[in-house]
Image (cartoon, rainbow, N blue to C red):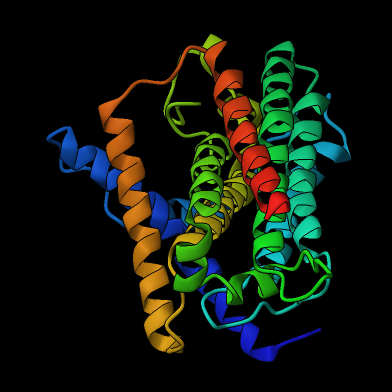
Length: 309
């Protein structure tokens, strides 16, 4: 089903997503006692990269050039499946939740293939880490969303639709099944940090080769290709943060008020990420799988509790 008023969500995502990165970096700078970059720095960087030329190794093929394009395209389509407040998704159908997670996985797969196409053992190491941690994070998202779908189902059929789930998260649901929602929200926060390569899972500003995960697989990208990768990362940050916000913030029925509350909460969440990264160091790499398995365990518990109701 196509809802033209669902254009609100993708438009907000496409225009405001880079600003989340600016809030995170600005908060980290302020905590460290520095002035820090401007809030619009990501927009400046994207504009600058789009006006530069790209450099390609002689060993790369079309896979390397297609990786950033496919990655960005999948995130843009994912934005069209994501509702926001009372504004429905542009495309809504039964099972769109699975398609949403699959699009995120496809975008990652394209970037990993591009990294492997360089023939670099260093990027191959980063690609292996990226895929391994993703294989632990994705089940938590699917199981958590399945638990919410079961909790918000209005009949005996689980639609597994993001739009139907979003419209039924209310104060009444929180009062009746708050434990389940807390479990899922906690797991999604862990996945949010892991999928966006944030501390304590990864450090996006690291320069230590042996500890790099996501950054290492995009080292060979430049110019517009790098702009596509960075913009896709901003959209992914926005979408995963929006999943948490839509779960935590119940709708009031007033579209403008709900949209303002959701956008404001998104930037508050970005500020919290900046504070977390300023207050703690990244985990030792062997500890990361334990953290992600713990998140999956929370979603399994939430689903079991919901199925017993």
